[in-house]
Image 1 (cartoon, helix red, strand yellow):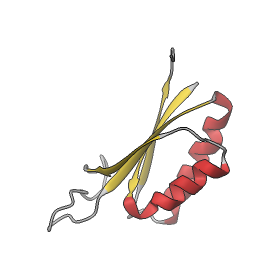
Image 2 (cartoon, rainbow, N blue to C red):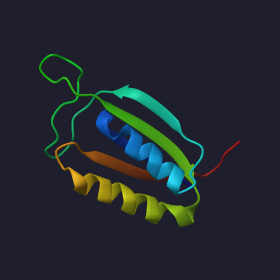
Image 3 (tube, rainbow, N blue to C red):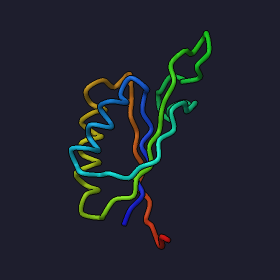
Length: 97
């Protein structure tokens, strides 16, 4: 099992939720207002007058065989509009309760 942490511009919220639904990934935790800045060339997302946009984030636990397809869909979403941006990170899950 893997944890997939996805950070995305709020304008992509419905697209990310749709992607999870289409891949039958039911369980996730959602953060609505996440501040930050991309590590390479991303603009700050701070919810301020200067940097008004905000990000959201989702973490979901998925079976190993779904990770590649999910990451591919996330990559495709990112390629649709590089300036809006979406990033995803995958971690191994050792145990769950």
